[in-house]
Length: 135
Image (cartoon, rainbow, N blue to C red):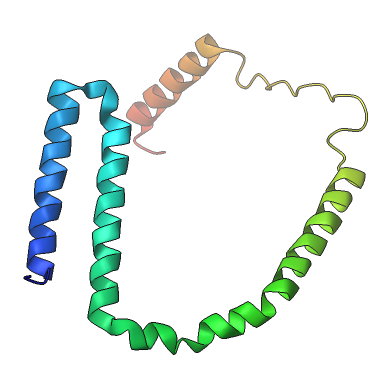
């Protein structure tokens, strides 16, 4: 049996992606999300299989990080639960968004007296600059 190399993985990925795009856009456009999901899962499985076969079983068996995390997993879960309970209690007790009446919406101030007065002022400033030559 010929081992799967990176070149064949890339070729399979391109063929699978093009086939998924053709099927979903031309034949069944409503099946686009499941088709791309299945294609991604297949490619992920192939990549994980090649990674496992390339690096060998020895590295996975001698993984010391896995044993360290396995021993401290209960403490991590307990800390997450305690912080979650304290955070939920704090934000429900001291959240001021739920308490009191709703404040009135701020109104925007009227600047310049409307569009007509702003346009008249701009025209008069332009005329003054053209007449005097100074800003």
